[in-house]
Image (tube, rainbow, N blue to C red; front, side):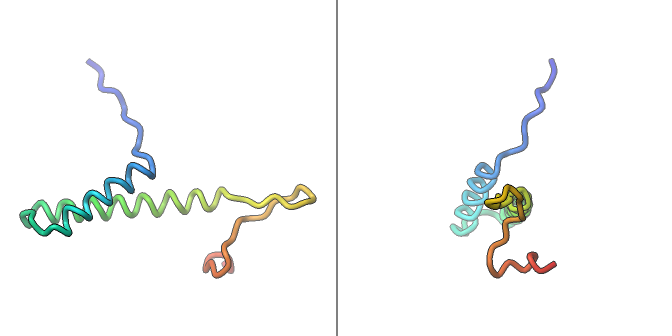
Length: 82
């Protein structure tokens, strides 16, 4: 039997899991080992979400009236000046 390759979780799925983990950790009822494992998972989810947001931001472009495009930059965006 072949195992189906599962698609990577979406941004929304990662955020949902991150919220679940935070709720579990905030309760403070888990054993230390489980808390540490969940913390590591939450860190990975957070990193993945940050990367997905960065990719989305880099894909956004503003179309000017003359048809040219320019990168989308929020005011105060530190990367805009680099």
